[in-house]
Image 1 (cartoon, rainbow, N blue to C red):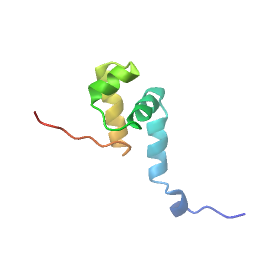
Image 2 (cartoon, rainbow, N blue to C red; image 1 turned 90 degrees about the vertical axis):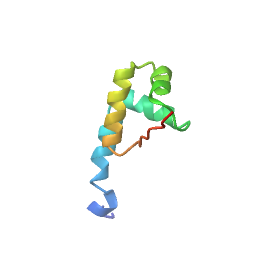
Image 3 (tube, helix red, strand yellow; image 1 turned 45 degrees about the vertical axis):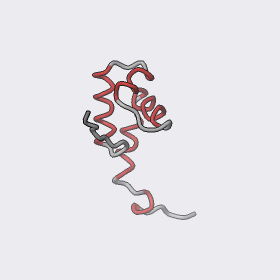
Length: 74
């Protein structure tokens, strides 16, 4: 049997990933983002979440390093 080392498991990333995926709303957001880049408004509409709830979950996903954000000026 092979022993897994900390480096092989990439332990610093694993807890962040688990935290990001631990909530059904964040999982729904990540599922929607498989289709490509979307605005927070589009995500809110497609997931049925409120705008503020979507924003909070996106902030958590950014903090976990699972999504990136950018602003596009008019």
